[in-house]
Length: 99
Image 1 (cartoon, rainbow, N blue to C red):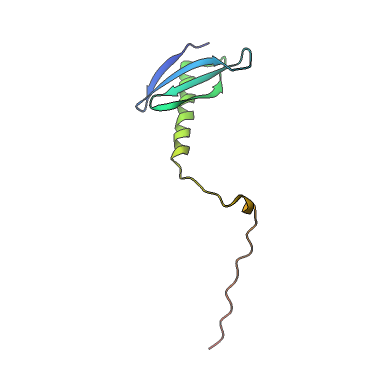
Image 2 (image 1 turned 180 degrees about the vertical axis):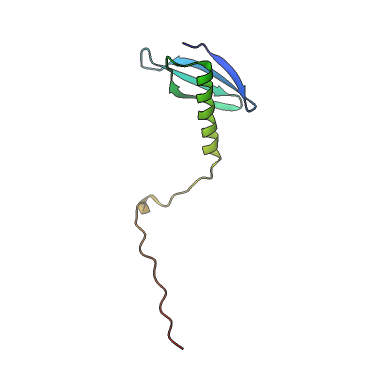
């Protein structure tokens, strides 16, 4: 199993470590933290095929995807009681009188 490691990308430092999942025996997950971000993440379980390069790639994909979604505008929904209400047909304009 890989040891803890750090790497730099896109002006950020990523610190990766393996920790056993709480309440389980023998189930390990990759945790990482990013400089400038107070949160830490555990996006995927360890695998026997993990290498430093594959973990680094997965961490970067996960974090870039997270940043992309955070940058998207918030979509506000309607009132919960009006969800899934089918819209009625669009009314047609009244015919014009011949002149």
